[in-house]
Image 1 (tube, protein in one colour):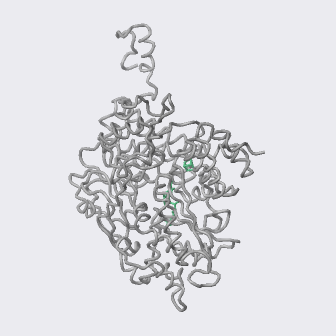
Image 2 (spheres, protein in one colour):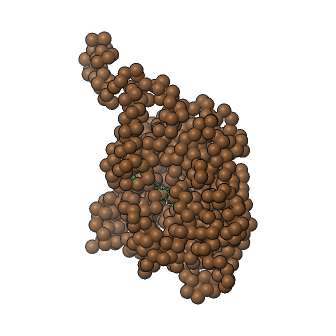
Image 3 (spheres, helix red, strand yellow):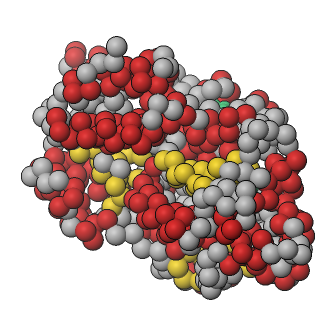
Length: 608
Ligand SMILES: Cc1cc2nc3c(=O)[nH]c(=O)nc-3n(C[C@H](O)[C@H](O)[C@H](O)COP(=O)(O)O)c2cc1C
Ligand code: SF4
């Protein structure tokens, strides 16, 4: 028997909880692939997922309670224990830190008498950090109960503190707190398009045109999510794979620190994204599509749903699309819950199926065995936009933009030390120096291309070009001027990987943690050359034995900054050949305090 729904949320108003439960199960039914969506809704409604709530969900979905708890424990935005009524998470990307996020968090903690990571005794609030929220052009940012607030200043943080103290409902907070800017500084092919929505789809349904997949192949379009796989080949493999159903998935997880261009596309060009997905569905023979939206972009959910509804009303989605008998396709939005690894396509599919976002063994690739083991085309948000435009322009014209191996344009998310952080769209082949000039950066020491898993380049390489021939990028472009300590930049990235490792394979779980400890050891002044050599060994292990790209790229930030900015490391090293990670003298501090001794004899000798 199911537990009484009214007992589940003991500490929340009954009518709200009833409505919440009714809404959840009316929306999602008893379909276990919706487990993550259901958990997201319970979390939003009750502030955590109690054991009773988990038992209720398990019974309704006919799955073991252990599975519900195991899925809930995987995602950082879901909680099995009560959290504060107000859950504040400061974005902890390096660009937030550069804008003072750590100090602001400390000030809020002082104002509200709370330590980070703790829940206040009255249950009012909790304050902690979270990985990059995708607001690097308008940081520092934080999330409060999942809602993003940008451009934090001390004054804004204190106002937030006061609103929390007064228990002001979020709906009554000043609307401008929740405003997110697009900051588009340079529009091109995608951001400057003047298409009437449905136009490409209508043209593609005309008899006598070039078939979609042939056209995409001829256009030379390559995926914009990072790996740059040829989109036409992917769609062809998906179409040719046998399966009862085929699926189209749009990867809007955008978790790579420093990347926020998909956020702007979903804000300004949602119709184009959905048009691209529908064209893909027509090409591969799919009837169902999913947009996997990262939890941090929850604020876009309703507007995206409204765009989908308009498209249904215009017969651009639904049954017999634009009068083409048998062309049925619709799109559902699934919300993530704070797990960077879910951007990896097979982990994303697991998450879509209501499971922990652990990457699958590949092969088989999603094009043959994806969602529910059926052929699935997973593409980045920008890829779908580019695909629609390539079809509209024709392959030849599209191919003429960019470079030989990188056709079309690329959206770049610029953040860090420059006066105009935001979105810049260029034909592929633009040099790093040109982007730096356009965003007004001066005295630039380094640029991190494509986020922590990408590459870090120094001034001597600013002539290099963005494109698959030279510097491939998913879009992040983080600028660091000569006041920045590149060791600290790498340390932030290493902490990010250790935090986001899904823990499935030992080399990555242990390796990213060891890497973090080694960087912390160097930062604390206990590092030696031995540690730098160890990092190189660690990289070899992670490269050769990690299950997915996260582990394989986890050492990149350190190796790249070591190559260009070795002094930033060396001036923190001790001149010893070896120093244990464990600080024995430090560990004896408590004993010294208890015995009231702090003379030389109570310390281990310096060189021991
Ligand atoms: C750890 C990890 C995180 C990833 N995150 C994203 C992401 O947030 N968005 C994305 O489009 N691709 C991401 N990818 C790449 C996807 O696995 C996949 O290659 C991509 O969605 C394919 O789309 P495309 O061909 O259009 O580029 C990630 C890969 C890894 C290994
Ligand atoms: S490499 Fe890391 S993130 Fe990838 S599966 Fe293994 S533990 Fe998970």
